[in-house]
Length: 345
Image (tube, rainbow, N blue to C red; front, top):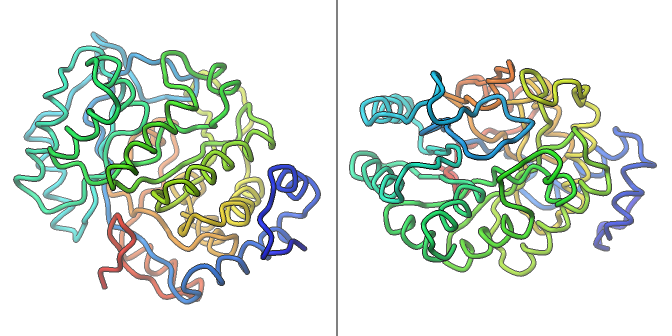
């Protein structure tokens, strides 16, 4: 049993993971969750992931979605398709667009600013857009500082930044599974600069591939340290690597027990992150529901559309009705929220 009044050190976190049974760890995490957020409520957001392009200059061994310039399946979304997707979301009661693409080697910076402005002119939605690797890529490509890039995007309509592209915040891991993508410090720098501008962001972790348990904890420690400094992260979202159709498909898929145990450790270690999302997108609805007893207090997005994980053959998108029923069946009160975790009902 850990002392919840004492902050876990990285060494203690590694030892706790390695010596605890997953149910035992889950019980401790659930107790911490009940103390740190409303014990009756589980929140969710009605959202849609829109990938404005699948063209990417980087090579990520874990990605089944990206294409190169000139590939027959490469695309950049048209205004007509973009507006249709957002209109469908808004008509369904949605409030958040998660907008991401690859590291496109050709598009001008104006494309991204105009993309945000066009959406804001037509719709009242939260724009949760452009991961840290995209923003770092913009900075290098257009010879602007990270802060300058963020200010321009913020002026165009960017509200918050998603935590994508973090994978594992360990340069050993990043150098082995990606080429042409930012390393750990650059990912952290983007989020720190965003926090300085008053922008809130989320943090993610994709685990269950070549990383060690210590590197998972190293990842969490980077997030916790930056949160101590800025307070800008709204949530942490860990999920498991899906190997099908990727260059790493020989790696056995991480199971529900490993997912739930890692989720529980996240709640115990990240004592300064208010919200922890369940990942039913990779784990399925039943494990997503179990996550509510392993530290999670939020179901994440209903995901009217999701393409990147779906490219690996995993499809677990849902509807608001299904998510609410899942939360109620677990014994909690579902509350619809916006991107900033403010309740809407």
